[in-house]
Image 1 (spheres, helix red, strand yellow):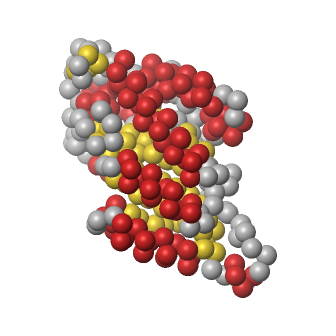
Image 2: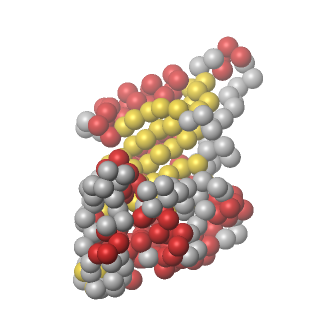
Image 3: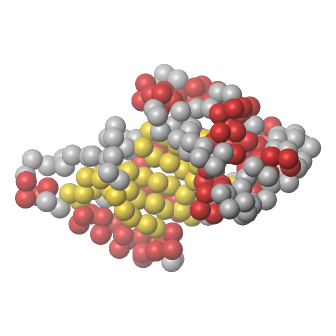
Length: 250
């Protein structure tokens, strides 16, 4: 378990790396992490463009400029080791890259906290306290892929409407879509070192736990956040309910 409320974390990391270094990284991780392939997936992202750091064209033939790496685990130490080793093997990010974090809670009921705009505003306030003097982080708030919701209408659009935008600072579409049942944090900018990314991951863990604590007593949610009448809006085009259960709580 990652924390008091978080069962597992998933990372989506965009960047560039030499193919030979990627293969070496994967071999090492297979030896260190049991069932590594179960937690790991690699692909590409057309919006990412990280230039080869070498001037030799022949060397750069081995360079992958737009890789997307996904990894999840229920042990925070394994996640941190994964990140450290990836950067150690030469993984590079630039301003075409962004990082996302998927949170699976120990109980799906905790997702309901984030259907309240006040939870988003709490996160935003902590984010500004921590990163307000860093232009790279503040720019993410203006990015079309990670804008913050500042009112309840925006949150409702994200979570309740079939075609609601997923490009939000905190995205609830991944709870409903494709059965992922994860809360997605999209505000994370590119990282220039493994330490920077780990600091951001730990900030998210602590902040999400802090927000949930504001809504709970002894782990029980005491503030009504999603009315049962809204559940009927969580329907697909065929009129069947999505596979999501959020009960009414007080």
